[in-house]
Image (cartoon, rainbow, N blue to C red; front, side, top):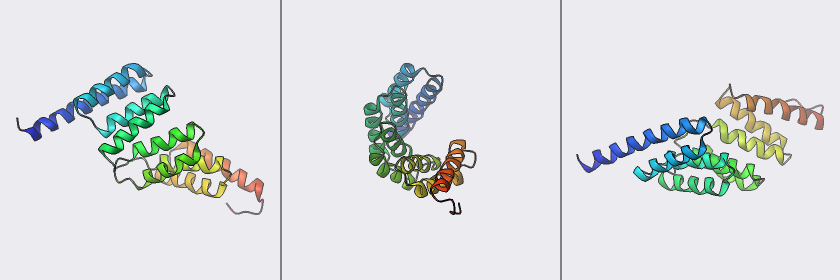
Length: 173
């Protein structure tokens, strides 16, 4: 087997471990999931394995480990959008919304990302918390444009529209 084929084979096996870890992760079996994400990384490090392991750490509120894993993911694949959004979301969860903004903006610029609704939604959360309702509404609406079935964004649009109307009853929303 050539070196390229061996590398491809290891990556494929590593991603299979990520899939198994993800299943455990979704069942709430975080310790087992983290162990399998780690096994995947040891076999062949990928941005996906680091990002998802970070996400698992965040479920346990270990945001420092989660952010560190996301940085490793970005080092491996700077075009993968998930870790940028996740870092931003972790800062929001820790009550540091200003730290989140640059990461969420980088997620919106990432070329390899399937869920642009999430950084828009998270930016909406940041701006709503800061009382910048116009910006919040813009991002919540952008999240809905990206994913019309994303219910948290739809609810956020309505909530922020009410806040804006309370502030200025003449406003057209």
